[in-house]
Length: 278
Image (cartoon, one colour):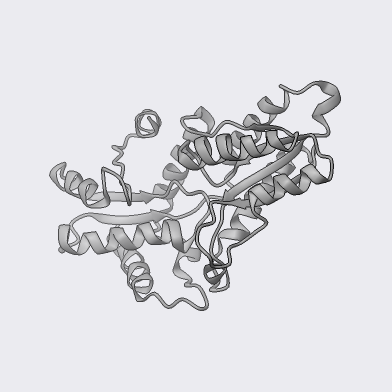
């Protein structure tokens, strides 16, 4: 749906690539080769950059290109993040306003906005990953757009395993606010742009049941999915990027201060080297 609607706004053809589901990166590249594509933009659907998400996906793209397009017949550039893009912020804010309108006037101002994003292991954070700061930047801009009408917090979900992860955890925040007497929580998936298991099950069902047990009215803002303003944001990103004639952002060039992944350096060098070809 994204690809179809974005294609209506730009004279381009869109291909979709996933890391862990079909069509995989390799499948998408094979399709592009068969279609005779010579120029491509790798557009991430993670608004905020992390080495574990966009970085990992770009590394996989680079690895796949070594075998599927070894002669570099497709010339590449990258849109690696857009945490404060005006239309992205507006799309989030409008969905929040729509949800807030569902509360009574007496309750509305007391609704706590709970921005929830996928957490990261602290080992990744301490390596210098920019993700926490970029998620916080998105939240800050959304709250400015809303006029800071409601109290809010940024919390982190989907932690797994025994290692230390970035917190506070979303479920612990729900329990904590229950103890403080908070009655209304409105969850906003601020780092996810589409519905999947972490919104439909983890947020809606797991945390929804937890909040109900604690006596909290827990609701969730709808995900962006094929929101028209979000689609406009993606189209604007691509259009502006193509006019800039750049291959890579200055931020993507910079590796984390404690980066130990040699593939990251090779991936960044590859995409930087595309500048002279586009």
